[in-house]
Image (tube, rainbow, N blue to C red; front, side, top):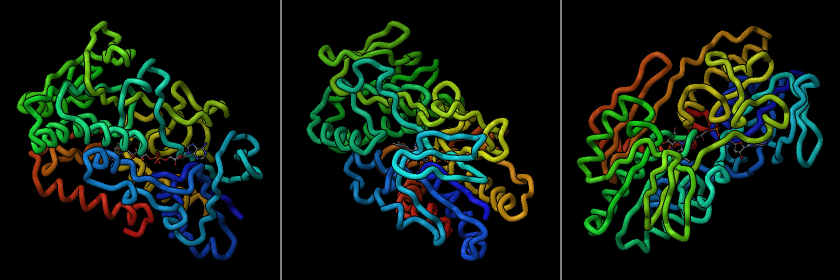
Length: 380
Ligand SMILES: Cc1cc2nc3c(=O)[nH]c(=O)nc-3n(C[C@H](O)[C@H](O)[C@H](O)COP(=O)(O)OP(=O)(O)OC[C@H]3O[C@@H](n4cnc5c(N)ncnc54)[C@H](O)[C@@H]3O)c2cc1C
């Protein structure tokens, strides 16, 4: 029997497991192939929904589903944490049970917040990158009657357009509530422009100006003084705030570092086309956990999962070398307020263009928020 083990039951891990299990349902039923998904949580949370929770546009219950409800038939789900990988013995050690042996291993462990990197941030800042954080920010905004709201961005971070989306949604939210005149919005960014992607920055600069948002570039968040309500940058600038909304810097799960397989930041060195861990032909990586020069986004995990699943099916059934290649494809909706949105679509070779925001794209995103589950289950 050939054994596929996937670590991480988030967007990328679930999609790979489901694509493979649907393609190989007969082989799994005959006991020729096994697909095991190891995840440290037994519920899946749809993270893009956090942005809507902040503005009371979605309820937390709409974002959460038990993993068991999202699995194609034939997948064995193990609710546990992977604590070490032995690549020579082809074994994944678990925190609370017997080790799992594999022929092929997929690492889909995502990325998490590195709050310790910015002293004072935990005490002085808000963020919408976890459900708890989004709920706290939502409560803060429910009480908010005006003042200075400062947005700061740590690097690297997932969903690269989220800082712009929050700023534009907040601007319109404050207008609708009739408190925009009492509210100053400051958008800071670590680079010398408003976004890491040049065409997005070119589009965003006048959009922010038009909304009366103050922009501070070259602002790398260094520390926060909660008592004084000031955020300091590495560049030596200070910005006072009433509400600080931070995108904390991210890092990969420690599994990679503990196993000696990851590099700085706990990111896995990954082949940009075949998605194998560099130097290994039996370990693959996808989603936020890679070191690839692509956005850390659910859409990227999805496009990678399709390629990886096709290659894994070939490997598991015929032992054929990976033929399908990932081309850096990414797609991101950008909410530009409460009723309009645009999007960017790009790959390794083709940078994005930003079309005019429309109401239709906003509703497309709203629809996607509700049908994401079908995507995860690999039924569409
Ligand atoms: C506020 C916000 C808005 C976003 N908006 C968008 C958007 O509009 N569009 C978009 O495409 N993307 C968006 N994203 C990004 C998207 O959610 C992530 O990029 C995507 O979920 C990455 O998928 P992944 O499988 O790599 O990681 P995840 O989905 O995070 O899954 C990783 C899983 O692995 C588990 N895990 C980690 N380590 C271990 C271990 N050692 N053992 C067992 N399990 C482990 C984790 O608990 C987690 O369940 C947004 C994210 C946020 C926070």
